[in-house]
Image 1 (cartoon, rainbow, N blue to C red):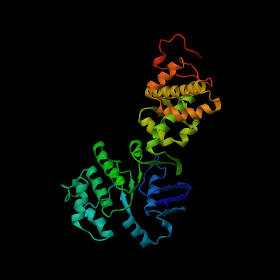
Image 2 (tube, one colour; image 1 turned 60 degrees about the horizontal axis):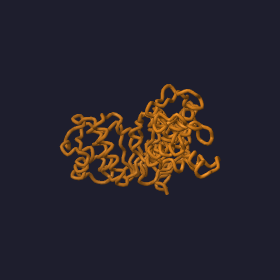
Image 3 (cartoon, one colour; image 1 turned 180 degrees about the horizontal axis):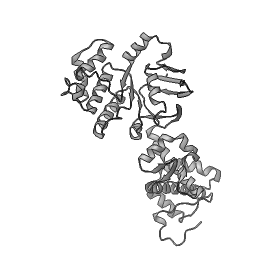
Image 4 (cartoon, rainbow, N blue to C red; image 1 turned 135 degrees about the horizontal axis):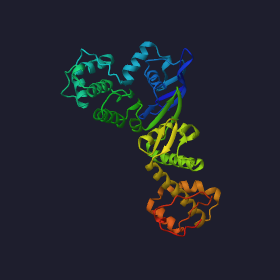
Length: 362
């Protein structure tokens, strides 16, 4: 049974305005999920409902088999105290309490406040020399680490983080994310809202929200390179078909289905997204040329050497191409005498091994 099951979750305001519109997904125990999307897409609303800070208009949230909507106010308060740890972008520290007292306050709502345990939690966050400082005496990154220590003091199994690095510089961002990564490795379930593609990539899975609708559940990072390569090939072929390097993003169904991954690819420098259009960068073009060359040479090899039927070439080439290095690809090209086209008649991008060859066969 998943730890969290979200079924048809809807949050509707007057207008009608939908903060969430029939979103459904599940989160397994111990999983790290990033919730992404533009401002106003429903990310924080979703997190607030998961944390019993808000109620849906329709749909259900089931945690450990319990429907949160069926809990009484007292049961919801106990659920938050015992099961959840909240990490907010705004730290919500009590300004007249010291760091250790702010952590002890969270203990108080769960069981008993114990200063030694609270101090140890702050030391684990690298704040051993800041125990008795007021929030005004701490930097933004230090305040966020106090917030994390407070969220974890009661050993919650589910951590909800809302833009935990939104106001931090790069150094403190790295410190905070290393703490969240440690939580995940310890077996805690993390649901994190973020607008930053690099932060989102650290999660095992990404959920993309647009106008309250769930538009993507991405693949795990272990398979992400294969997905990015496949999407680069999609863009390359669309450019080839249209004869233009700049493509309207809305014309690619793959963009709509994999929006978050395309944002990551832009962040990595493979492509540019501007005014609703896509264009491969120089590095992206070189990578896509190589991928298409590798795939179409694999098709040609299967066709000529193994006499495979044309209708089976594409699927079988997909199975073997990931194991072909650039050196092996060049050797295949040389072995096949530098063909210009694949068996379907589509062009094969030329490689270094083809340069200076006066006779390149079709």
